[in-house]
Image 1 (tube, rainbow, N blue to C red):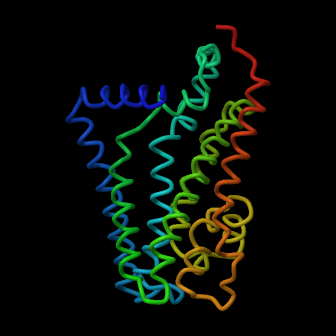
Image 2: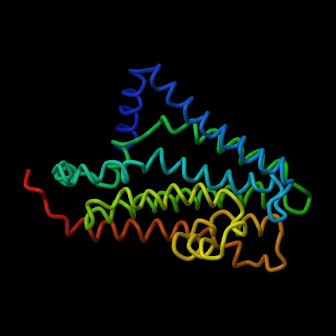
Image 3: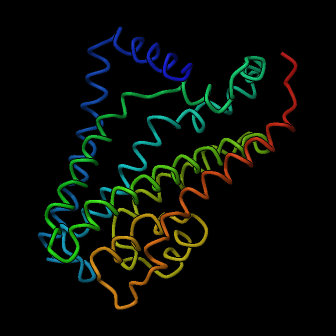
Length: 261
């Protein structure tokens, strides 16, 4: 596929500066490492957080951070480059090529440097699965949690595409929306019930991050008496969010007016 051909070329370009590439990955690893140390220190001091142990929280942390990191690798260009592409008229070139604009934006802005964060998130997620496994829930942890994580990847990918869609209308929208994207990771990697009700509602009904992390983990660990089938299927919202974002992007793209360059 053309997509993987472009990604391969981008990856080779990064490897032209090996030291810079390695330092970038190490930087991502260190950021995640010190963030984890902060979480572990929190639980070491207080023991638990609203009856959540550190190993249970690792499940939520792993799902959210892996999903976000995956989206950063493949979809970050929708946030960082769309504004300059439209304002500079470069987006016209994307439209003239016989390939999907979504494919091009993703491929040309592929970011392998984010693999460091992705790797740490995967390690934490696996650790959370192993430490919480029991005869009652092993099948959910082994099969259901990976499905939840995939849905999370779709959700964060959809968020980036949604942000890019809004750029067709608001050219100065990026800084504002990045607050919610980054904020959702910082906050929803902890149990949702640790935050005020307004924040819980926002990240459930407006930006549904808790539907691909908190509620599925509750269902898996049976931490609530109301752990029903509704909680089990809530991660599908991530896939629906992605599809809606793609449809919106294509709709607004048709209304795109060239800068005239």
